Length: 425
Image 1 (cartoon, rainbow, N blue to C red):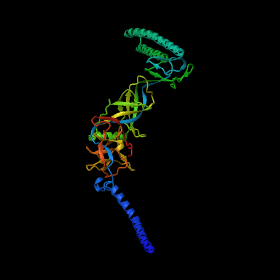
Image 2: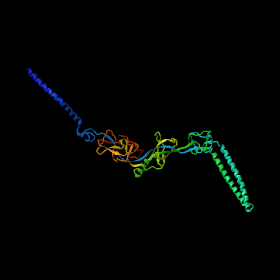
Image 3: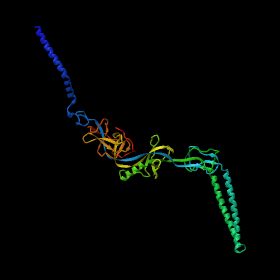
Image 4: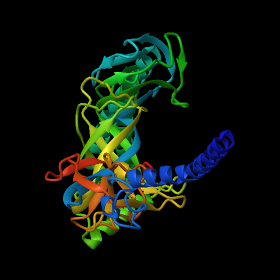
């Protein structure tokens, strides 16, 4: 009896062990099926197959886009330059002598005709007196010669003297007249030289440091520099523009793509060395007709009011000069433009199927925070400006419009530079 019970128990134990081994083999398969059933989902739950990921890969990413809208843009060139005085006068010695007085304060404002220096006048006073004495002697000789010539004229009529004597009397009168003219010129010269001993300012402006002091000897022959007076209100700003940029603007204007608005009265704005905007607006005076062979640029001169003398000669500045107006410009935010290793620009668009589409563009000029696109985009294209990270061509996206900056309904004015670099996205 016990033997039968033991054998049955052993048989049940063997069958239980067999079931355990079979269950341990089936359990991983069941777990895998449950994982696939819970995570896979239906093929219709994801995006279209082959568009940026496997079927059922989740919701497409959200991106922001701006719609390309042509708008008139006033283009400006930002040019480097330096300030120069409106008028400048170098005060130099015109007579030789000892400087007796300096009659101004260095760095102060002086008026036209104001006395600046006084040179010892004593030698020139004496020279003037000598010239006047010589003139008086010549004038006295003229009186005598004229009387003699008059008497000889009467005598020659009566044949009382020879013709030669009469001719000599007339020649002597003419020589004395010439001596009088020479004497008067000598007096004028002496008066001029005496006047040069008092040196006055030829213009109203600011005088710099004095090159000579009281007691210094200045020479007419070397034209000794004594001081410099500069008119600073208004003031010139000499700007440099490359000849290549000038040619591009002229070609664009000739083709009709750019409306040339540059004239001799074009307004010009200014940025000082520290980046601050100068509060007053200047005007263009002229453009140089010769290109500097050493720099490959030409000079554009503008004039600015400078009542407070904030601008001083020799300061480095940057000016924004109107280059023209493009009536149908396409602007794209710089963050939307990326460049490859060769510098070629491109953007990502949202196409009609709701997928990303790369588009090569030509963007060689920046306007404010945007690129001016001349090729590659058309009106109505949707350019992605937000959510560019991890996007690939052909990926489905959920696109939403983003407000552009600045508004595309108003003409845009901004400093434009050629050949800049875009921000890689």
